[in-house]
Image 1 (cartoon, rainbow over the protein chains, first blue to last red):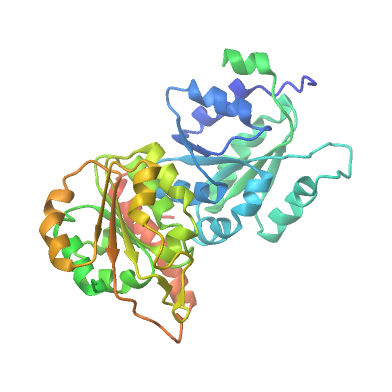
Image 2: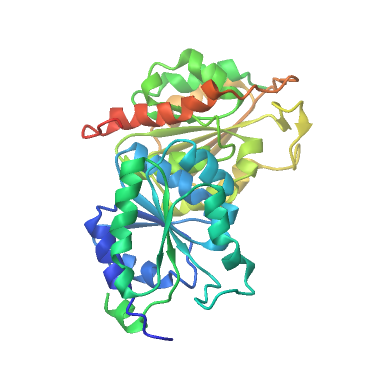
Length: 172
Length: 197
C-alpha cells in the first residue's frame, strides 16, 4: 500500500475535535482503519448497523437528542441509503457529515468500478456538497465539511479516496 | 383483533415523558391522544425508518424511554434494524409493532408473509430482551403497566384491524414539513443548549 500519509489516528483526532459523539457505520475496506481507531476512542461511541440505510436515520435520532453523530459507509452503501438521504437528511435539513469510502477510486481518470464512477454524479444529483480525502495533506477538509454542514444545516460528504497506514491504525 | 384507537390509548397511559416515534396509520390515532406532542416525531417522509430514528434517540437519551409505534409493512423494509437494535441493546427502547398484514395506505395489498410471519419470534431471535404478542386489547391493557417497567429492547406485537385508505395519503408540502419541525421540537425539549436555526 502506498503511504499517503492519511492516518486513521489523525482522522479520529479530527472527529474528536469536532465534538463527534457517535459513529454510525458499516465497515468497508476504505474506512476500516477508522473503525479500529474509533474502538480506541474514549469520547466516541461506535454504532454498527446491519444495512447502510439505517445509518442516516439513526444519526437523525441522535441529532434530536443533541448528540453529534457521523455516518461512515462505503459508496455502494450510500446508494442503498438513497431514500434515507432524501427523506431523513435533506428532507429534515440535517447538518450531518457523512464519510463515504470511495471504492474504486484510482486518481488516474476512468475506472471500471461503477461504484466509483457514479459517486460524484450521485452526490450532484442529491445536491450534496463533498470534499475528497486523498492524502494526509487533505485533513483540513474534514473541518471544512463540519463547518459547511453547520452553516447550511444540510448534509455534507467527505469522500475517503485512500487507504490508511496500518501501523498508524494499530498505534491509534 | 385490536383497534388502532384502543391500542394507542393503552400505550399512552404509561408514557410519562417518553419520546414517541410514530409511523403510518397509528400516527393519526396517536396524535389524538398524545399528551406530549412536543415529544412526538411522525415519520411521514421516510417509510420504514421509525425503528432506526428511535434507536438514535434511545442511544442519545438513555435515561428516557423511547416508544416506536411501527408497522409490519414498514418494518419489513428495514428488518435488519431488529438485529441492529438488539445489538445496541438500549434498555429504554420499546418497539410496538402494529400488524395488520396489509399495505393499508395503498389499498390493502397483503404484505409478504401475511398470515405466516411471526414478528415476535423474529424479535426474540434477533436478541430483544423481552417480546410479547396480543390480539385482544383486554390482555394488553392488563399487562402493559408491568411490561412498561421491563428493560428494553422490548417488542410488543399488536394484531390490529386494518383500516384501508383506498384514496391513499396526499403528500403535500405541509405534511412533508411536519417531520423536520417535529425533530426540532424534540431537540428543543431534550437539549437545553439548542438554538433553533
